Image (cartoon, rainbow, N blue to C red):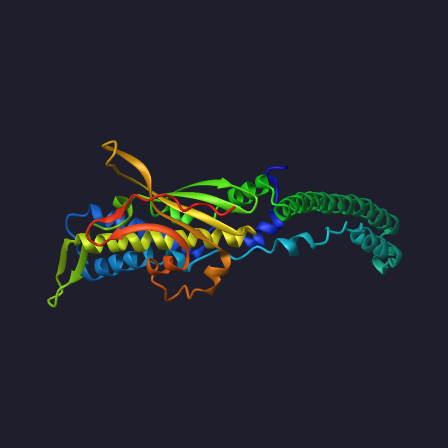
Length: 329
């Protein structure tokens, strides 16, 4: 199959905004948080508290943003670009000027009528060259658009037929998880024709703040270590929020029946005594269930009750290792 890089030039401009507002906000919030962590002293207490609160709110509301849904059926129905007709506007205008030329009194007086006519004739030849250049440029653009349309039709057909390679190309091109990556998460996707199996690697130390900021009644900044229970709750909400967001993005780009998302973390394996990358949350999410949720008001952690999932969590201990939910094939 044709690689995605040569595809969707015109279509991509309509569907994909590389610099999404939500990505910009995620980058800026993450950047400010990381800079704040490095500071020994913070001068603007009010701004520091606001930045901290915005960041904490953002890591718990990742699920609220999502790309626009791609209508692959409509894409298949898109008509091929029409070949542009050749135009001779410059030539016709030059010919018209010659045909309507009437020698003036001064042309006759200085006997330069023939010179004027020859000049008008030369402009016709020059106009032909310009028209030819313009027609060739339009035709070359048409050929590029036609090639993109043909390749896009091939990819859309692949999506319709559940071809794994087409799925990979779409995710690679649109890169819908770029702003999630700003929060220290990484994805590994196993592609199937009707579902995707996603391992989401998370790192609490990179994402969840170890302190909380408040402004005292006198305007001074209060900074203290966050409690273990609050840290764990923030971590749980962030992971659950990210799981929902990833599912939403996949459903916005691909016609899947469900996705299984497994949050993976570096935790102690009590059987081996080693730190290993193991699942701490595993959920199977169908699009129909997500569409029924009020994403603006849900608690991300509580919302997992709507899905088949495995998760062991306590406020004091945090996550425990679980087994991945068995896939329904």
